[in-house]
Image 1 (tube, rainbow, N blue to C red):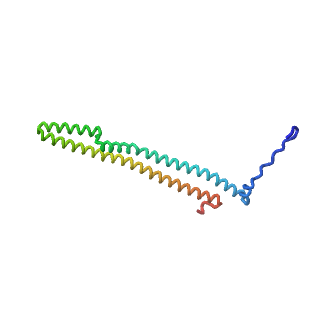
Image 2 (image 1 turned 120 degrees about the vertical axis):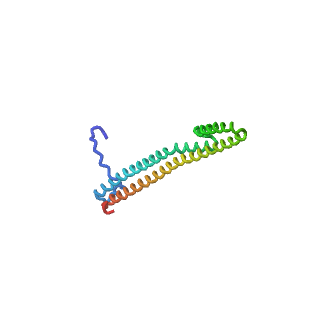
Image 3 (image 1 turned 90 degrees about the horizontal axis):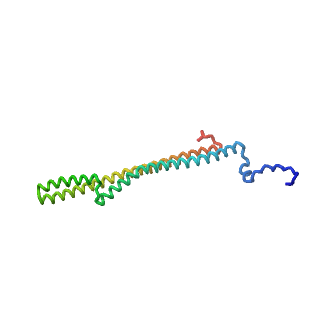
Length: 182
């Protein structure tokens, strides 16, 4: 380009041979239908990914609801196995111990042995109840977690089914078949 010369507009770029070969024999309506199918396919893919992500988030939130129950139940079981009573059970044990101590004063030495045996039996009963309660509480959390997993699987299946139906319909549109002929 030299001074004084007028710039000539560059010719419109020619379709690449690949694009020419691809669109060869297609009518304008066919190209529009394929373009629409491509655009809708991209949109459908994005929406299906979004739905799957939302389903996973919902399942995770539901699992999180069960986590405190699992943790508390496991803590109660651990404490019972270690012989540690909850504060409430400890108070009940102390009240029983005080009541038995009053009885020992009335019965003497043999009463002391009986009282110690009764107190230990009561302590073991409290620990067993705490252990069982801990298992029940943990099972509540486990049930919630299992429910979350089932809900997540059902949501995944629903998303997969909807996506499959969408792409089947899209293929029919791209192929020029009316949707009513399914």
